[in-house]
Image (cartoon, rainbow, N blue to C red):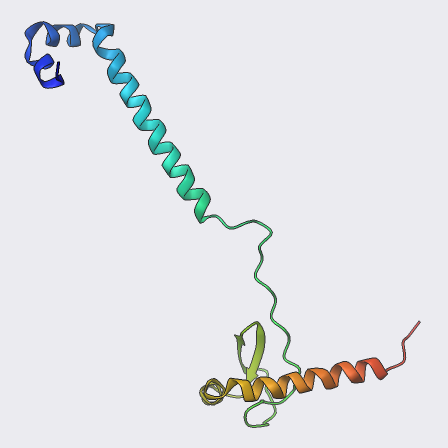
Length: 129
């Protein structure tokens, strides 16, 4: 018997109002199932959005030079700094960023050469005890 037909009968409405278990239990089971389903979906959605606690953003490689890689001008305290492919880039001005982005491979090679030179200089220094 369909729900609509069941509620159309006067004795069914009377049973509903008096709290007959025959009417309330199926409704409670349906409500419980709907709430469980909603809670499960919400939990899965929240779990998918969370990142692992130990997944910290990688610290970029420090900038090895004291000059702008584009213009060779000395860097000031307010140098333009940003991160390019996990590497910190310091430039003297915003205009240099546009030049850097035109040919990034050229400037990254200069930075890599500077890093190698610093590593070699550090290796040559005597170790302190």
